[in-house]
Image 1 (tube, rainbow, N blue to C red):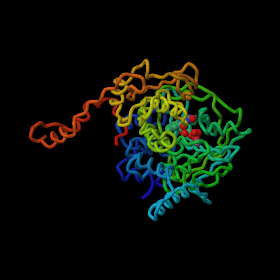
Image 2: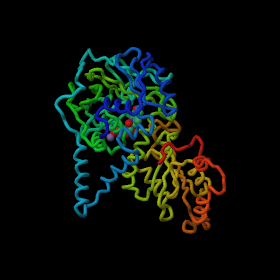
Image 3: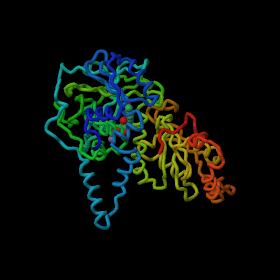
Length: 500
Ligand SMILES: Cc1cc2nc3c(=O)[nH]c(=O)nc-3n(C[C@H](O)[C@H](O)[C@H](O)COP(=O)(O)O)c2cc1C
Ligand SMILES: [Mn+2]
């Protein structure tokens, strides 16, 4: 079947799977949709297609990614870990031995070849083309998400730029505050590739913004790839078919041919305006800062275009699942440089940059500290504020178990490392923006090798007794809800989101 080819195929799939509700009652994009969506997201409810949004003829789709099931469905995969394995298979490709392996190797090479975006001559995104004075962002049902937001924000865009020096494409997801009919702001944070393209520009930088993509392409805009890697290539690879691009109408940038909506335009060096405040994924309002002004030169759309939106706020929100997809998909890539890493978890409540729990195969004294430093040196993970390291065999997704290890295995005077480094653009806690303290907690076992006392053995029942009790269980006549027994100690607000 394959991953959905465009937003419409995705909506049809969601519908068939009972994962979509159409709402015909008129709703206000000013705050009302946020409150409706918030209740649905928090109860694990369906994607919402609002067909009658006040002030616009376009329907609005929200919560398309709001559960683990829908996120896996988007990739046409049984689970997010399967998507990660697909990438891992290619990263860890070895010279094939024997015919079967050679054929399998060729299939992998084909999947890499397919990942290259393909240029096509025309696309449905150009059904409607508005340029110059006809450009009117008021046509779109842009949400104002939270009471403290000063304006509506476009929240689920794929922003396409090219590196002025190398020509390499970059696609990123950055919120865009609406200023007027033909202008928005572009919230490029300082650590992001999109920002770097802008800073390299000598004067003007052309920018295209695609709205309403197939779910894998939309996801890929949020993926933390190295700067020189095109996010649409990742999308093509994960979809198993190339992203189809068509030349934009007013700028020299290619845009997804089947996007619902595209905004074409430019930003210019020195042309900035105050952005925010914005009710952010940190759970707080991000303050006002200057950001580049995006001038829209064309608005193109499919006939009966559908506008996509997402609401961030106090976690958990829909973006939790975009983050969890990244966590799972990038595990094999992280293992390429940190092979001792068994698994990791970025708790949703930690807004992704606040906390990272890793389990490692510990081999030598200081190994946990090595891995902390590796995390603090890896791509956007480098912004992580706290790293907790546990031994292999500890389930990093089980926060009760992690808490148990931290409590039991840590001598705070010995196992807590405080250091400093770059912090997330949105982190309001450090005294200085962008830079501050980091904490590493080594909750692995220690022992004589690391200069501590002998480490005691953990309590485990013997296999023999376990098996005996299992086989005799009926005899005892004790009725037990097995799920409850296993889960009893773990039921808390910290129940992990990803269960495998
Ligand atoms: C819903 C959502 C909204 C986001 N908003 C922003 C934003 O406003 N500014 C930003 O710099 N990153 C934002 N991000 C994170 C970036 O999309 C992400 O870091 C991506 O890797 C950036 O791509 P780049 O490194 O190619 O620039 C957002 C992510 C999601 C899922
Ligand atoms: Mn990038």
